[in-house]
Length: 191
Image (cartoon, rainbow, N blue to C red):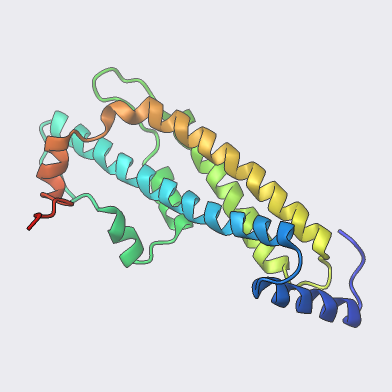
């Protein structure tokens, strides 16, 4: 962090950011901010996919135990249509830990928690960047550094998500299960 920007420096920075948003000036910073926005959307969909995988695991577990499923799983669009925040999704996933295979008893908490921790760290830095963007304590170099850190954390989110999905992928629904729980979808008739 640098010293607090004086009023003139703050006005200059804000004017620069506004011009940047209009597509002028520093293409490197614009690319970094754009990457952060895209990565934010990707972290969101990874969280949604993790929640859906958890739903599938829970449903299969209930069926394996001879129980009637006590909820209906959600399509991706449900999370967006109902504006479920990424942070809420991550908290809900954590609420269902410990997660273990009902047949073997093997636990999968570490893989899930690693993903949740990285995704939450990404969200923390994202919030920090947004909050500090116009702060007089933050100059353009600080913004670039924060973007770099977010890009670095995103790479870890993807890595941890990949490990989690590889480990838990065996529990994903088959096409028949998808059709049973979600109905036929995505099949358009060609005229």
